[in-house]
Length: 377
Ligand code: BGC
Image (cartoon, rainbow, N blue to C red):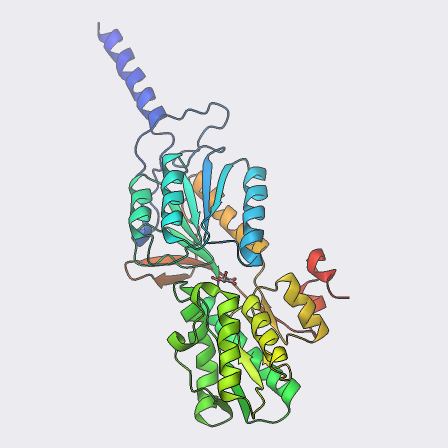
């Protein structure tokens, strides 16, 4: 009888260990600890979970804000290829800049048993509830390219330094002014990105830290006087809206003046601004950009757009997948020095360096990017 009892006890222990196989035993770093995964059976026999990790062929969700700029289209393709190559089952969706659509897509990724959900939010503050739900279900959440704000349901964020990006954009604008327009003072206008995107105010803040002292000492004149982010932002990163604003700035303030330079938060908006200037009969202003989109790489090469910034999607996707593999293996979130407060918690941030691209260094920057190198002809 005793033997039978001991046997039963051993069996129960083995069964309960198996049942915990899909869950995490190692807690993540303090502020970022998601709820313990609920006990669940490991249904896959082919891809067993490492202790504290999850199945090597687990479902991974990727929720993208939209596909309106080249970086998000690249992310969609690269996540599919790279997650499959790593043995995972990806569910990748883009939400066409509609917050309720993104909330529903994340919800369904949770229902479909995703172990990690990678999120590039449309609005950094509008996903709190669904991300808390993911956390309660034991799903890891990684912010991609943009910060996830005002929620405890985030384990880390992978991105290019956003304030740094803005500083580089402003520095490139100043270099462009010197190179293209001779000695100052210079007339400039300022553009920001979509106000819901947490990157946009950071890009602007970084840029203004460089430009404001020169506005104050008269080297730069913002002829319209529009220097607040709210005045300069471009709703939904919509190029057409930026072009319409530029049209009215030019007709309202520049009928008898040259515009020497424009701060632009990304390449699509830069091309819209350049087009507006060309149509108004202005000389092309010195301008910044972001993303090294193919069309802008061609424009930089032909001298139509002064600069862009490379933030290579393949590097960002590779960094994200490295984190997913660490989680899968039961090793938790990798260490990082950077933490950013998102309004609720300090979030681990894995930051990559953005790089300014002008005609002078384009060949160097794209030396390992055959697609873009091909455009430099
Ligand atoms: C990204 C940029 C992109 C913009 C609009 C930002 O959050 O960092 O690369 O151009 O969104 O899609």
